[in-house]
Image (cartoon, rainbow, N blue to C red):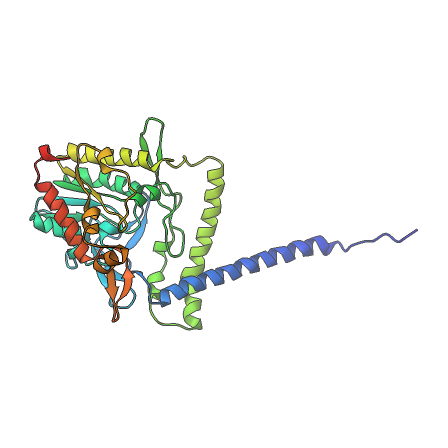
Length: 377
């Protein structure tokens, strides 16, 4: 008869301890690795914003810090100044404390194309158009925004300012962004509002799933060339690890809540969503006495898009991108004329419309606004 094998009583506890320590160690290692990626980005010649320009917003996901000034960074050259007024609207430097009073008011809603990525505020189509009309630009465009944020801002700003003109950017990616719960960012997790739509077509804005930690941590402090072990350790404990731990925990919680049906489904059809959202903003503008403009901006030489004429018969329709395309012979020629280049030899640093493109966009809108309403298509 063989001997019966026995195991020490501590084996189970030892295994549990080893697994726990190993798991914690592995997670700590991922925190270091992912923090190094964010750290390397901040120390590189990168695109982005410098200074405390943006903050968490419970409705928009993120928004401008009222009255803030900072810079937009572009590779290969000096940063561009960025300033916001008391309402969080983009303004030329020196106008952070302004109170808009000179009519006509021109409110612009959109993403980075309207905000004017890589372009000085005074050269954006919002400012150029306002000068043509001898009025004031209310540039509510923001990098990364989609239809959900545009709808929130329309409901907030149109009744408040009662603008004379409301320019509503129309681009294919704006609806897609409104069908996602998260913004596309370089590092970290930034929840944003999304849109849901019932069978009757009514649209509801679903608020961000949880607060973003990215804007409340001192990343701006480390956006500088200084390097070294001490610099990285400070970054890791003050910014990198707190951000990653927060985002990991909140993301797990979000996924569990979504599986449990705690969040309404995303709107499934971008074309149907476009009709509902643009229609609502157009109606809101007209109710407040404004002239609504639906402005098509897109990628170079793009031909597949939803016809704007189907969105509303009550708006001025401006296909500014076709006007830009007619100046170019092909995609490369378009980029040479209307993107942002730096250095010698010149290198493409940003594909967004440059100052020349914004001039053409503003000219197209002004030309359309000069037509009497009876002559609208």
